[in-house]
Image (cartoon, rainbow, N blue to C red):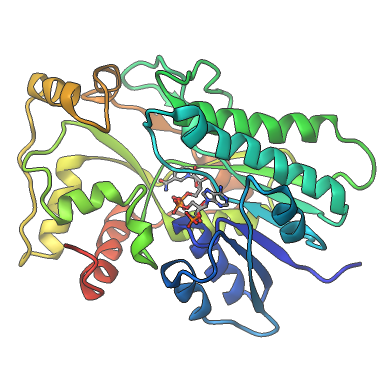
Length: 344
Ligand SMILES: NC(=O)c1ccc[n+]([C@@H]2O[C@H](COP(=O)([O-])OP(=O)(O)OC[C@H]3O[C@@H](n4cnc5c(N)ncnc54)[C@H](OP(=O)(O)O)[C@@H]3O)[C@@H](O)[C@H]2O)c1
């Protein structure tokens, strides 16, 4: 039996960094893939992580589009946690910028797993975006029975990227036979908040918290969001290496909250800072969305005012997950931002 070596792709990223920290705290041997090992904002926080027991950290360069680098990164690994993807929801060139990194990247990871033949466990980071169909009704509760089959390049390129990449993994796993078939699980986080470990982590899901921190939005959208803590998402990935159903699909969602309540919690905990707290009336919000570069009117019609819920109970049952409260997650998101002067 080969010595356990866990490859974490996208280790410079927000979720990837927390997965690396989690594994090192458990004494695991980790190979962390980054695109540029010379960039301090991508690697410094990884190098400073606490390592327990026999744990070790190796940082290797890998680009999802460079097959040789992917093969080198995966070679000899027993475990792979594949988080690397581009996390943006709109682009003028959505195929190249959003879909290809997920889909071609995941194909290259699977091909490298096939080539090396040592991988026993594979966990793939998917998303609620791979589950949520375009049409849903106010009050719906979605489970892992649903697939975002109707996501298109025009309407929902990020959903298309996450759904298609998951299908690459599932088709491969379904077709693969033999004794060497690795165990496989997909993890589906909703909006992830919690402590950033590098200023680069403020660009993805935390960019909307930064809009509140920097008061870029004077008024809040009348919208509910589902939230999970990045530390819980990391824990779920690590547990899924050895726990849960083989082929399982696990939602990681702690709960839901209106934007105005997110702001209220932050205002209560950090009263010296100014936080936006007034909610934009629904019809004004629709008009604002029509002109906003990051959202569209069709998105706004679907998401504003309507409430969507997720059933994360399988992760509680099979992975033993207990979610941090949303209040704790929000409160813990802020100190690293303020203490490192990552706000503007
Ligand atoms: N954050 C959320 O709310 C959320 C929710 C659901 C699912 N997810 C999923 O979770 C995963 C991680 O997201 P995140 O929030 O941690 O985003 P992130 O901070 O942007 O991390 C993404 C990582 O992917 C790497 N990457 C991007 N393109 C690459 C390429 N061509 N080759 C190699 N690496 C590449 C990035 O490397 P660089 O540092 O070099 O850019 C980065 O390390 C993604 O699969 C995302 O879809 C995130």
